[in-house]
Length: 332
Ligand code: AHR
Image: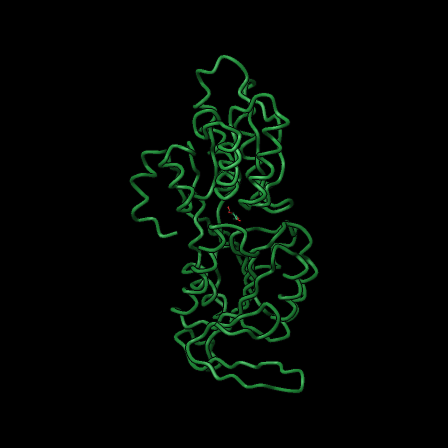
């Protein structure tokens, strides 16, 4: 992996680096590769990642980098550090560098039309991966590969409805939302709300962003524990926030999984361990291993082939017994 400009790194089969100009800009050339672009060189993929906020994201980045390498695709990788403006800058830089394909996981859903139109005008196909955008013009990107986040939230809510069947009083829920404006935060909130809508005793008494991180999950849960008289359930939009919240719950002298039931999304190893240990009660899976499917799509769109407009990731759910069974083989 080599830096090519601020925040951008490149993967490829074989490299020659050449220092150019007084500003010390580094120009990199990929030589050969299994995925030929038709012009004799390897396909160049510009990929803009959200950041490194969670265990899920780390596994997703690793999957993309490793899959590009084994597919012989030159990867220019840029970390947006949770900022949309960084993603827009990275996409413009990919356009300038005339990459063959651009892929990105959008930090937020809105505000992409201008830069996507620039990519289209430059004839560079764009693939959305993991997260969607809300652009009305669907011709601005070739396909969207990722999970159905509404379904994930719905599964969490349906679990809670079953779990609360015998409860006689109110079931007070606190919700830790993902990053504000992101597709998984919007959709997981909606799916959960839809699923519990017909069960009046389930009440979301507080809902705030924990930014998909452990640190923020802990901080917000501490605040919830102080401000809320009775908390029966925590719904966390990802495992990392649930893990941070567990620390806050334990510090408050309560037992996570027993005094406060926890349902979260992702099923990363640490989350699965907490589930197996009885500190989380249920996890809805969100699969981060999108690299191999993404590289197949990159090859197809680079070759001008038609691809389906939407490719959905297959996922499952875990209770404590299933987590114990799955843990030894869990890759991330
Ligand atoms: O977009 C996927 C979400 O982003 C994951 O569920 C979360 O952990 C990540 O940060």
